[in-house]
Image (cartoon, rainbow, N blue to C red):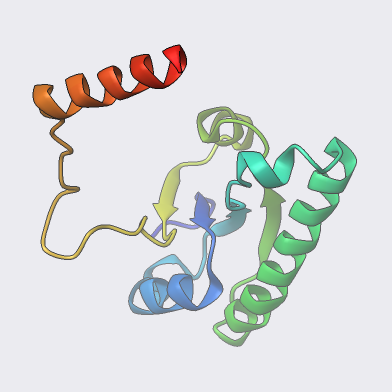
Length: 140
């Protein structure tokens, strides 16, 4: 890796990121690192009860805990990194940072063991029975 390169590391879990980054640290030691924390999405049910300020406060606290786990680990490997909390689309964040390389070490989304997500097939008779039941209950 050349000196002067700027690398953005997208992460959401310190332990997962450390295990994924461990192998390639020697190649990137002389680059400028930017840790970009990608906070988990808050569910609609949770977010509707919190103000915007409370949601931002939670995101900052979450990111600070993540950086507190990552920075000492990187420092032990001789790497200093600036930190950034992603707000908005990652494409915009990465354009603003003007990085040369992006390393995505975010934890993968959970998948169904055994392959793809199973498709749900609705059958016409069950839908007709459901509709008929609704219609009959409305008349009663």
